[in-house]
Length: 384
Image (cartoon, rainbow, N blue to C red; front, side, top):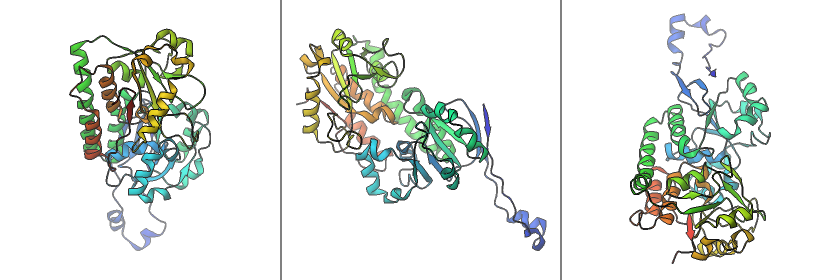
């Protein structure tokens, strides 16, 4: 698919009556060189660049811009979806403390739930809208893509959720190209690939036995049990870390559900609960509040309480204490390699005795991110 957008410079009527043509042309601002990209949806998009005004189709895309422009990640953001403050309030608060101007950025609803306002977007005169890949079908079904095309507003699809291992790096490269931040993108990509290899190279060489793992997606978020991951996303993280995901072969896509009987029958050797601060959605819920500055005593109590559910009856992981919790947003951020390191540390402690995911997270913040690192991203019932 080819999508071409170009916003030509137009001389105001009457200007040439007082200037010679040569003078007028010399006074015109130079047109930006066009940027040709292929987005994560495989669409060829041409737009003027680098982009000066962008709309974020998901607020958590600031994770990516924060890596590319850590000193001023909101400079070019003229609008964004209102989800960051609700889905990740702990990091939102830390960004807001350093960049209070972000509170003044216009917010809007989502493409998937049909609350996006095309007229509002047009009024912000964006050069590009970065949209998450999972919203593509809804965007096209609602005709948003056609309406925005009529207004010469291009959509560029990125992904760090549907297939984060395969798509995060090309998404970073794509945004870097559009924003004129190629060098920053490549520096992060080098770091991410190096950190992932610290796990995958060891697993490939050692070929250890793979312990079985149940990923409990947002355990405790609701009374229903249990959401999980198929072969994608956290399911792939488990495989790369040297484990065997019990939902692989049962859940066909990235996300799905296992019933308690399936979990009990599998009796996984490890249970990993993804958790976050979801007071905005389920106040006082049974979810495990992982994230920067998390209350680890409260997290441990909630994690232990989740082992009392029917689905955990007689499960090997519970008997052995191999029940862990990890920050849910690792599934939806460019920091996937840190989660894979921590999973590897849990699944193969002897192989990865010298691997320090905490140090990796600290280095990530020190070298690339605009906020300081604070612990709280994972916990285990086996922790001393």
